[in-house]
Length: 351
Image (tube, rainbow, N blue to C red; front, side, top):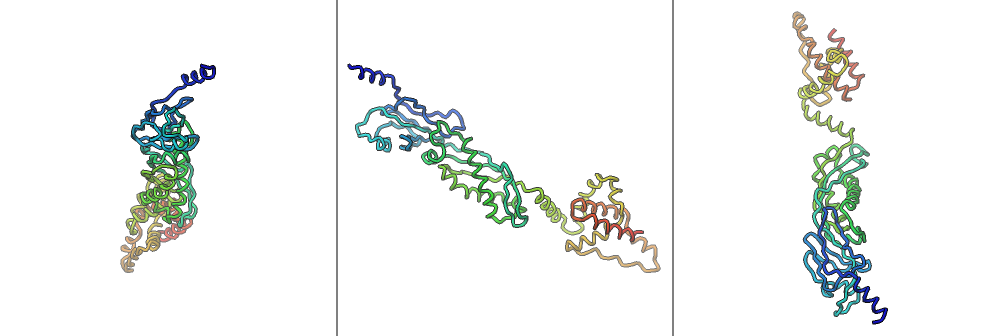
């Protein structure tokens, strides 16, 4: 045997030949695992095991060749038709061969969280340009390993869900502004439309995920954080709806005014310095709200001065009403000037 032949024999003996190819997922985050080859070659007739929730892909010189679903395979020219074509093997080929083998995890990825790291500026037909935050969860799984390999993971030895989901979150956020703009739903009504928005976002995102070789299994919009100024308007509208007529409105404002008056300098007495402003202001509020104003008491006969005195406003009632009006000033519903003008007017009436 010549020197060259002996070197070839030594090289052949030193080579490692792989006869079993499989991947046992040792963590829950790996999406793609490249089988370690180094300088080894795959033995013709070797066994390939692809477990449930896995797929395997053979890549020859950068080109995706054969794709395998769950099962056990004997690697021959019959089970590797694309690789056989790329390598120009004949039907009697029985030599070891080289190929990159990638395993893909197709398990469902549940409870993936998404959210807007910064407020998103969108246009609202009622409030103009506003900024919002939104949060939710989604679930997905890998369906097309060939597409995922060519568009996302490439030749990386290990590709994780953490890397992928950072990109997916950015994709989700990028579609939020478009969807809210297309919906035409005022922000003040968004809280009652979260389910519809979630479904609409899922429909919008499904083809995007499919373009990566993924299936979007579920998508939920869990919360929308409205800007502070819109929340104030929403609170005011809810308060008016709860109030209903003037009587219920007065009760509602009383409940809110008492703790506010207690915080003011002078307490309840300080808030009621004007005494009596509430009666006339209450009638004005009733007119503004569309409620009938309280009927003006019929003046007592001149011969009964005592009855006229009894018709004068009760000081305690005036004090309570003034506390409510003072609370309206604090909430911005009444201006301080309006409050002072009405107070001065009523002070004259009660002498």
